[in-house]
Image (tube, rainbow, N blue to C red; front, side, top):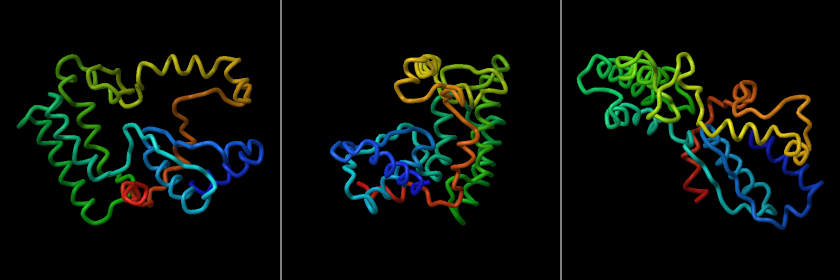
Length: 208
């Protein structure tokens, strides 16, 4: 993926050579926490002419061990799971399975660890109260099944409306005929999984 991005930058500066005079900042969120450090590493090692100055990563997926282990303590601290409840017991069992797998090898994604978050979101205290589930993007809010993990931030409706305006699409040289802007595209997500890559947290010491 990083090599593809370098190819894009190469073609881009052919058209806009002034970019070489500008400071570059890479930004993203969620799984961008994997992409951005790998892209930054490739730029620093192979494209020294680019003035890479900083990285912005929000809510980034960079360290599976820390993230998977944080779900239950976070849920308890925010009253999503009650201590010593049936749900607590179920999640604790799932955490133990996950930790056993992580002790052997760490990938970006560890499929047997996914049920931890699913169990909390779908079977947490909200289910007991009103049969709904927890909004994964804002735990203060409820979500409707089966969209518990896909109900994005409320601001997305404004972003979508703006980026799909004809004048905005024209300014970024697209006409919307092939596709309009979406906050999530399954084909892109599936194409850039890189399951066997080393978690990007290991790249940060050299980048910093």
